[in-house]
Image (cartoon, rainbow, N blue to C red):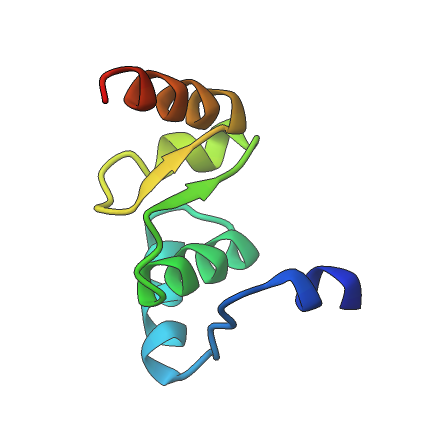
Length: 84
């Protein structure tokens, strides 16, 4: 895990606001660990959250955070670059 932490450019600290947001996301049916990931991504103002978890993708549809599977993300990046 330390290898991945060294690659990270931003580390989002979990504070009470993030914990509260994660609890709200849990109430919407998101698993606790996923809710924490989503809450952290929102707090860090991430443009995207990538996951292969279809259940999480479905649960995040109504959120402002754009949640995609990695293939759709790559396709979106390629399509976006072709229009430039």
